[in-house]
Image (cartoon, rainbow, N blue to C red; front, top):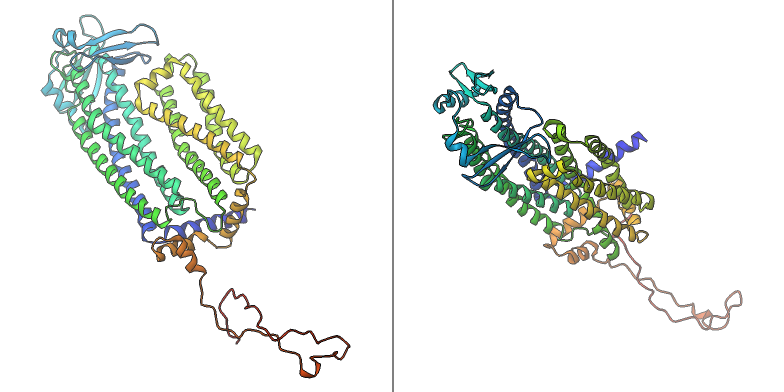
Length: 530
């Protein structure tokens, strides 16, 4: 059995290699996907490093000030009218820790704060710094003193440390987003390689749509979010008269904007090149994503739904796992873990999702391929469980709060629901079309592939030769010059037996006149005997 599995794997790799090296378009598509994956992955890794560095700095300050771990903040208002609230539970009343209209003009300021000195401390973190608590405040609250070997110490009061909880939350979200984006690039490369290796137009369109989403998110970050975040951080932390009055992020936004722009340019270029290459691949595949040699029209139609559900499942692998992982990180590493009252219920749903995700995909994939009713019923049942389970999550106020406060998690959650519902609908359609020839055709196609026969290769090459005319290429493939072989004839009976009887007494007077017989059917050119 192991040898058969290895043999099948080798055959699949050989078939994928044949498809990838089919022509210059397929090779260019594969190489582009590979290079773009690592290029954008490097940029995302740099952004991850920058966000992690500044997130670690702010987190250390908050912890040094002994801000309770269960305290979370949320922002209200608009520019120059921001109100920052801090809560120790949800939905309990929250206290105001900063109001720009009041604090920016009446705050006493941080003890010993000096923007010029703070710049020298925070601009170059490579020299290192140390933190110590400062309880010399008049009200007895705990402040923080930042010490560096290259500058005078900078002291921050307790209110400033409370305000820094908000930047801490936002920077931690950016770190999670960067990590998810890195994995997204490698997943996107896998989908692109599968698309060209299996001549799968649905997967090709899935990769193209994913690139469009990446470009949209990158544009949102460059055009709005980074600038808006910089404005908020400045009005909360750096503006004159605020409780901090310290430039905590002197180089952060400039560096991040530079790499965000590079990421947007690379994403946009990737989308354009991917679109051009996909268009050429569509022409190679004759713009008929599911055409196969010898498949009847109704099988082609059913096969479209099968390939569509394949694309949904492959996309759902990343979306559901990423969305679940983001929620797990929130539960384990944020104040939500101390506020949540139903963490065990969330853990049960997360564990159930982690256990069922791969069996669910396998059941859907092979249940439709083999037209197994038990497998497809199990597939639909698990999909229904996912929908109900994650819908019930919205009953939790902490999940709703996280969903609203973090758009990135919200996008993954909505996309996951859309894909699960689409998979449920497509699976039902495929189930209703069982016993109509799809399983037999897929079995025959697999048998041909195991015999080193790839009908798509012949079809695609003929399309190229004929300039994209599929009908013409098919006629040309089966056309040949009929050899001029001598036509067989029925010879007349000898003259002495044309009338009367033959030697055994049979009447031969009615033998037909000499006629030419039907031409023989030649399936291949004549090969002279050796």
